[in-house]
Length: 196
Image: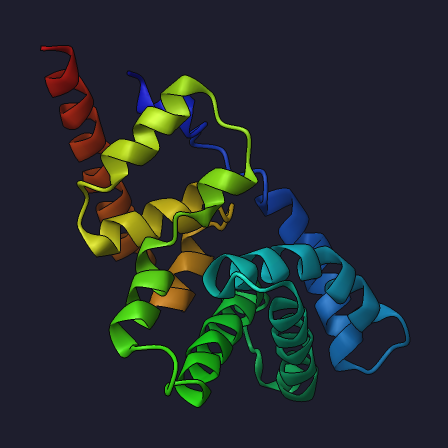
């Protein structure tokens, strides 16, 4: 199995061309220009909503938390110094709100379940139409270390770049590249073992 084709890995990051546009929108939003934050909201709401929904599995809760992400982001927008870190910052806010949500409802949900939901969510399989190779890749991913699983999911399912993943996981981009590389190598080895 060629995991590069399964996950569409390429050395060119098409997001680079969008970074300039996003930077302009963020600058306008920071200056308080009408409509700029609406553009940001329209660019990111669906992704943030899905990120949250896969962790809480409840439509209304996910909608409420996603709205709260953007309220928090709007109130703290001036604190973002690097525009490239914006998406990762949004996802970090979303992740923290999910954790807070589970803490507030701790009488009904155990901490271990929160960690499993954040690290090992499998609802993504139900949400997208996967071919046989991709299904096998997801099955093999269960053999990866939790950190490797998280990086692969954020990179290839949430469609984040390494800078955004580094921001979310509080690691360097280099560390994310190493984790991703090792995960892909391990998946390739596991795949070869299946053929034997």
